[in-house]
Image (tube, rainbow, N blue to C red; front, side, top):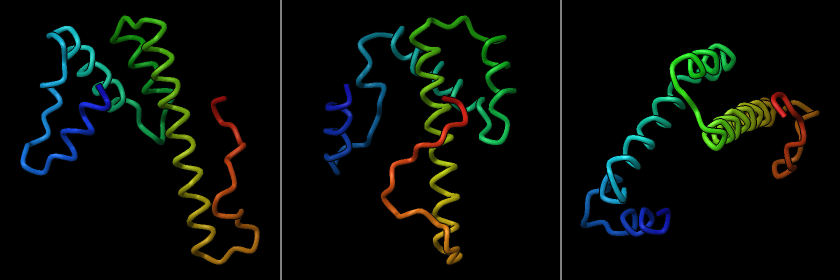
Length: 107
């Protein structure tokens, strides 16, 4: 599916429409559900977003794993922004640009 999406992106003549990649309506609904879930998670209040999601949706274990991976991704992006700010401000303790993030907020 990702390869097909990349083909759509590489073709400048065509408009990118992910709906053309879904096998059926069930896949489309699942994709829309995950988009709505990700939108519910506020970067500055993850726990409230997760509570809302668990109250609103019946999730499979795989969906829960995907959501927790997204939460980790958000954490890593916030850390990268902090590192970039430190580097731009000239702070002497700013870590090297390509150091792997090893901290953990959510795992």
